[in-house]
Image (cartoon, rainbow, N blue to C red; front, side, top):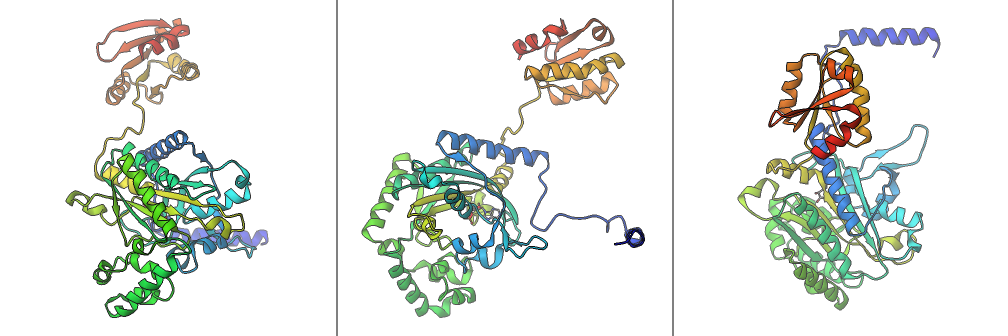
Length: 450
Ligand code: AMP
């Protein structure tokens, strides 16, 4: 564009801007996506921090993967017919590139890709991975359902499909809920069998639905030939009666799957974790095999709002690694819905400490004290002593008011005289007792007082 054209286009957009009302000039966040202001952001980080602590304890390795991945990764892992691929993926394309990319809608495919691509396949197994961060699904926004949301995710890759790992993943998830005083979680659990026994079950299921097609909703009629297992996921009122007497997958498991599932349940019983055998639980993705599970709240009136929202879910995916070209590697994973945990904490008004309480407030009086305050704060920072201040305010009363509001234990009073003599007054806010301390000793004295 020539200089002349640039100037003309700037002028045109300025004129256009002038005609817009102040309200029209605003840009809003994308529907279903939110800003997290300080308290929400602190709570989000608290959940991630607690998750990280748990993963350290249970020996998971924390990794992170890109938010953008080749679209093919999700198409090939989730199945072309899954809701995620069919309706919910955000596809992105760089200008000038023909590569099809997608914003990650979940972690498992990325974890599998990273596990293979980075040679973790050659490390001693089990390889336990932990991931957390934002994900994107073009879902219908409502309570507990956002278009950008967060998950905390665990994956275990092993040489054998040991039921112990299913139990360990469920246990760590349960402990995360407990850490946030959510103690009424029930583990919904089922087994959908393996390559050997599932086809027979799916056949029985298809026959059942064909026979009762009239009573099924339109979506289910459409899904029947494409993804029969998904029929069990239907939440529509019309299908509920039909669902109540469907053939059960547990009755069609092969011996190996039966033994595996029994063993998972025995581990859960040993740990005292509450579970419910849920024979309509299948989870909507192609890659699952054997154990599938979800975390829901106990059915009570108080939980009504969250009744149909699972707080997390996962299962075994013994064939996904080989599906992406590596050797056969059984695996199990879980994804916990961090936004739903946040919503629940807020709904229940649970008192979760998200920020350590401020303990010390610095009050300055006069120009010299103000000038010397910044180096004083830096000195204390070296000793890891956190200080609140209101250096932008001049009046003593205004500063005292803030200190009072924060409920600090100690006020440091830095007046003209103290600044001149390189000392500071330590005031106990509860008793009113005061002590003048040389600046050189302040960090040591404060550490003792705290
Ligand atoms: P999924 O990957 O669909 O099994 O989801 C695992 C967990 O992530 C769910 O149990 C929810 O807690 C959470 N989750 C899934 N989709 C959303 C969403 N759109 N908004 C908020 N949380 C979600």
